[in-house]
Amino acid sequence: MGTVSPTYAGLMETGSEPVWTGLPPGLLTMRRLLLVVWLGAAALAVGLPLGLLAGPAWAAFALLPLALMAWGWVLLGRNWRSWRYAERADDLLISRGVLWREETVVPYGRMQLVEVRSGPVERHFGLAGVQLHTAAAATDATIPGLDPAEAERLRDRLTELGEARSAGL
Image (cartoon, rainbow, N blue to C red; front, side, top):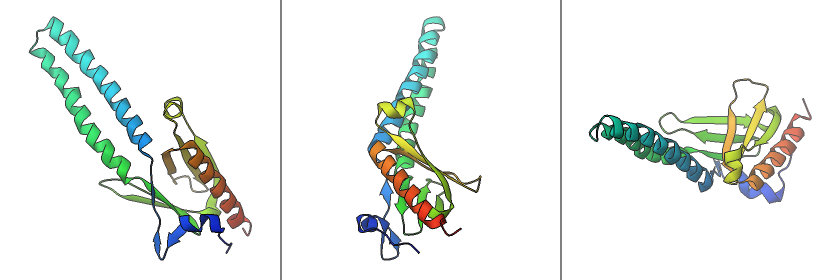
């Protein structure tokens, strides 16, 4: 077993419980803004033509996208709160899900590639995601919506630990 540097010892765990880190609020802001933009545009696209062509009563169908927007607003908040990750001595834990909780455990020695990804919308909001690749094709180890500096720190740390753990293989 390798030793853990004192810099990251506080990130690992206290006792037997891992120290969980949640996602930054910028991800929730981005997702909610996209929800408002797309469903707001849908409400206009439905309500305006129906109101002009079929009458004001038919324009009430524009309330459906607005109701979906309100419901989606709440669901996005619950989903955002469900995401968290923890760095332990030998593996990385990723937990997510509201109704169906899913916890992924990725041993450092099994990591083959760690990527930092950031699309145009994420870059606009100052966010990046970390994607972990292992030998198992079914492993979906992604941490979305991180601060780019934290994503790069996590990538470097996981790469360093992965190289140290896989040296004996």
